Image (cartoon, rainbow, N blue to C red; front, side):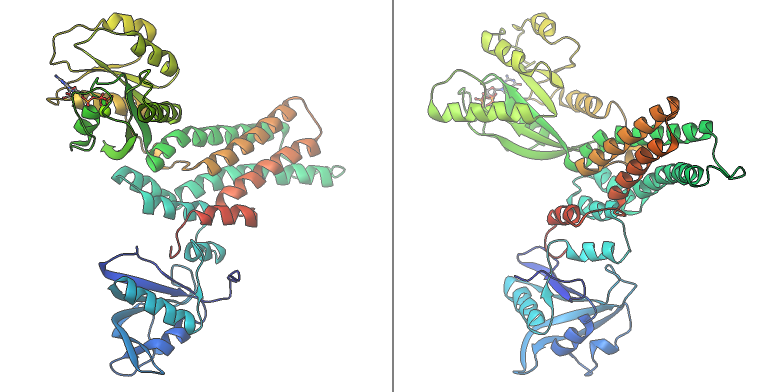
Length: 465
Ligand SMILES: Nc1nc2c(ncn2[C@@H]2O[C@H](COP(=O)(O)OP(=O)(O)OP(=O)(O)O)[C@@H](O)[C@H]2O)c(=O)[nH]1
Ligand SMILES: [Mg+2]
């Protein structure tokens, strides 16, 4: 397929595939209205190209050559530059069935539009200067937001709060850079407005501090965006699946009294005080030789490796065994909450023996059977993930690994510039580092982004966004 060019008019189905009340085919580009003219029959015979911006019109989509009606629709016109892409945009609200959506899309494509690439509407909003790249990324975060807090953080970024912070740091560095350049170019002239070395150092230190603050938000940003992978693990039959169900408040995992019930990992997302938590129930870890159990246990180990947090489950009514200790040895360097389940049963567990192996890890006593202690466990999860409350500062956060990697790169360059100043290196040496930190920051907002990086960002989107 030919690559779509920026001056092509693009079209795609912008709603999820499937049966629903309404589906939307969206068009964007300079011929969007012309294409609509060719396929829209309004009651009074008026053409979309005569419609005012932000007006809504009733009519039919039809193949005009054969007079075949395809669907009854509502058509909206949003004219350039006041639209999502800053181009002329037409949205056709039709009935959301595969046949209707596909026929309308086919007709639109036959009449001069090109099928949009993934994320291309948002990409055009960036290329046409309506939003920057970090804002475009937040569109994806909004679509994927699983809780109200995730949504709030993503909306802040869409509103440009992260871009503003980056802009502040970049300005600080620009100030330093232009003065350094001036001092090199006009070194002989006495009265140039050069910053003193102390001013330069102060500005660099401010930029360093702001960058570090942003980097510190990355962990929470990632939590809000992707959720915390929380893996429930332990020996067979300790009540892992029962705990999963108690946290989910529904009977998702199979529970039986037979050890080895769970043989595969099961994932579900829950919302704990606004944080998305991705719970993973795993097969109990034992030395089973059964081929099904063995594969399941391999998956348990894999999940443990990937976990942000582990709920290590033991049984209040049973003594600690070697296999519990083997699991502890594997997980002890991770973030862990020790969950002592079945607290409704008489105590046989030696908690101190585990505490010695897992010093300073929080402990929660629960009964997955009757639900007691589950609220405390949720609080412990919240504490460990967010070290307490979510603050307003967390709501302006670096939301993905791309942004984090760039910030780290920029920070390294700033640090080099600072030590250059402290060692009184020549101005041009310091200038090189300041410039590379400025260029790095430009990649977050898109001022200095490569085509390849752009493609990578938008490939995460679906067609139609
Ligand atoms: N008394 C009591 N029994 C429980 C509790 N939680 C789970 N059980 C029982 O323990 C047995 C095992 O529960 P599961 O949730 O299947 O345990 P599991 O750890 O997922 O087991 P595997 O998947 O086989 O590794 C079942 O009979 C549960 O009803 C609890 O808090 N108290
Ligand atoms: Mg189970």
